[in-house]
Image 1 (cartoon, rainbow, N blue to C red):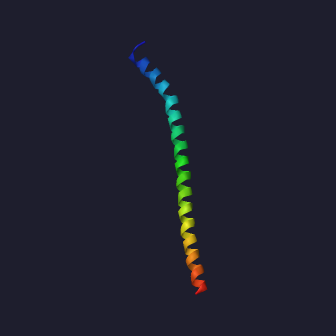
Image 2 (image 1 turned 60 degrees about the vertical axis):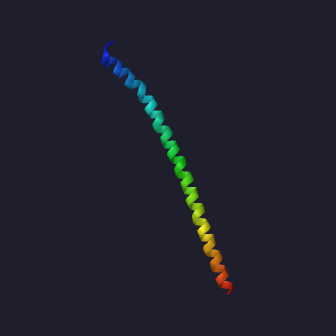
Image 3 (image 1 turned 90 degrees about the horizontal axis):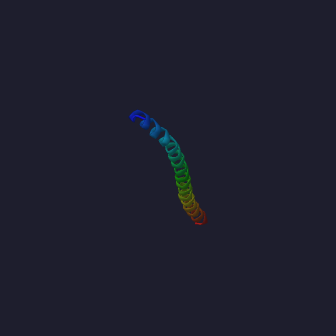
Length: 61
């Protein structure tokens, strides 16, 4: 086998690894997005809770 043939075989061996890497990156991105979304929702809920408490105090006065 010559040099070009070896390059072709090594390229085909690399393709499944590239596919697996892409899948792992997509899963990691989805997990990161879910965690970021949950954190954002918690912060928003805390802010809304504070606003509601302030409004309740003003209603009593």
